[in-house]
Image (cartoon, rainbow, N blue to C red):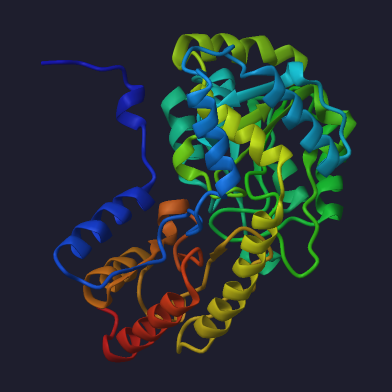
Length: 393
């Protein structure tokens, strides 16, 4: 019998893709399915970005690039990050990667091993915990609480740090909650980390340009005191509606950059060349499409929150970022995953159960409002009718 290493028995997955597969299967059978499960913009990649990739192909950019990415793109990333955060960044510290998950994989792999601990947000993106367990490190959940506006608490986070802690993962604006951690809390955390110089920080800021109600995104890049142990995760997938392009970037401190480069050489060689030219056009070209998309998400956000709060048994805090709502469904009497499954199978609405995002996700479901307002209103009506007519089992 074949035997694999123990890590592969511990590795998890992202259930949003399983829900997407089931929703697609039901739709292929003729069912009318409204998908509020998958976290990707429903907008096309802007035309000038697509044309840049086509031009790159026609110009002959068909070969390998440096493992860290082409220099013009790394320079553009450095300039963009400095413009948005005020932090000076060298292109030599920028790594172009095939999607945001790759940065998580690399960072967690660097710091995770048996006998160590990695802190991660819960509820949070499921790949954090999956990769931590894969490495053999102990995953330590940082509670993300509704009563705190789904922001992390600096005091609670710091209280979980031990001598075994190697890495702290942060995410704001957050998936799945839409929570945005305010500046005061981030500054309190950064000040407290001075007492724990052995802890590296991975800041997942992939939704950094999607905030609402005047809420400002506060990047960890703006804090010089932790720059020597900070890894920034960002990319094009959400901001430029480029999920399928598999294009992301990370910024690494000097002590880790060459390790990240070597991992790239061993694992993926480089990111495909035309996509990198598309990324360059995205950063240096017009940003009108980004602003229009975020404005539309804002309009849908208000529809979702109002509609959810009108359903008996559901309450929903107003998310301040990303494109997710994370309503509390405890008063319906349903457990989250059975409700999500029933809504898909019986009502034709795809959502994700809160426990798919962590042990503290029970009592919640995640809805993505990266769908049309018309479909969102139809989905809300179906949810209301289902819950009114179907008692919890």
